[in-house]
Amino acid sequence: MSDPAVVAFLGRRINLLFLLAGLVLFSVAWPTLPLTHSLLVVLMPVAAGLAAFPVALAWARPDLGLAISLASAVVLGVAVPRVGGWEWRITVVHIIAIVVLAGMTSLRGSLRSLPLSWLGVCVVFAITAPPGARAGWIAGMTVLFVVCGLLRVVVRSRRDLAQESAMKDVADARTAVLADRARIARDLHDVVAHRMSVVVVAAQTARYRVEGIGPEADAELQSIADMAREALDEVRQLLGVLRVDGETVPQAPAPGIGDIRALVDATRTAGVVVEHHCDIDATAVSEGVAVAAYRIVQEGLANAVRHAPGAPITVSLTGGPDGLVVRVENPRTPPHDDAASTSGGHGIPGMAERARAVGGSSSIGPREAPRDGEPAQFVVEASLPLRGGRVPALAVGHGPTGKGPR
Image 1 (cartoon, rainbow, N blue to C red):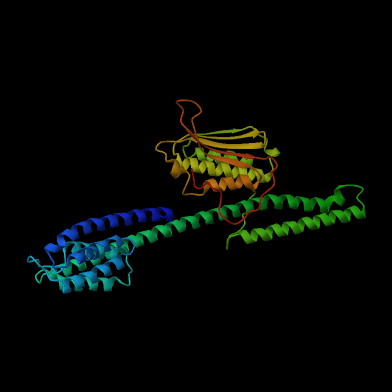
Image 2: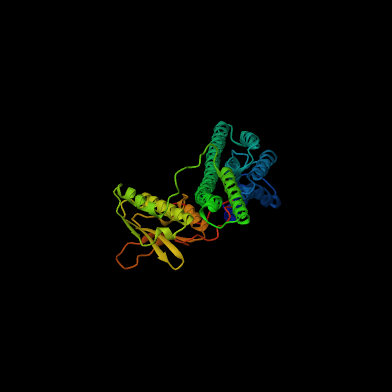
């Protein structure tokens, strides 16, 4: 409903309905006007139109329609004599139009003009209503303004709350993606720091370990060690920019392929049936790719336990044509809402970011049953290069299109 095109479409249709209502009232006001007021025949359609057609403005400009209706009611009530013992100074159509326009003004008119509109309605009914009915009509119109005004406040507060909730969800999603990217950067730092430290030590100690290194070669190795040390310092400075205030960098070694077994065992202790298959050599996988695989399995297990409680889970790490294929799958347990499973959280963007960070790709979502009679599966599958590919820049912004946990 917040789409401007939809709102404009509905607004045009509602305006047409009020125009139709004005035509119906006009068709009633014109032939019945001679029964209540003495007026020249040529002026009767004008008076009937002033009584009925302001209703057509009830949606687009209710305050303007009410002003026209009140002004014409005063003129008709004061200047035109009545006939047939009619006690009101205005017609029934005029009364209906004023009530409708007063209610719509309370709901959609300018807030600043509401007191003036209420006062004008009360004055008109004090002038045009029979003496015994004036107090009742004034009280009734006052209640109408109060009730419609309160309803307007409630609707506006709910709309504002919905907008704030939507903005909060967007901010939470953005924060979660940024936090996950910062974690990826810290994992990459752990891998790079380890390798660069090895380079520094190897370059500095080469003169003692390798025979025949002359002064020029030793100077070149020392230069390599200095450049590696500077690169390591720059990586640490970049990590400091990404780090949240007060957060410390974990000193534990980065997790890898061998640690996935511990994840599976921990999940089994919670009473979940987990099958684990691994037919790839952990030493053939670089540290960055190993960290990405570990995190993808970790998030995949957490999502499976959370959104498909009691369902068996299969975790497999196999060698594929492009390197390592990580797969976490579980049956989709009824009741299952596909829309809810792909919105509202940040696990899927995090796994996709992990795969892209090392030059890989991911495919996450529901899959049809491979054979009749078997349940459909929810599959997390990531294809990762063994040694890591080109790492894209960790740009600040929104995550992937797919959002939320499973």
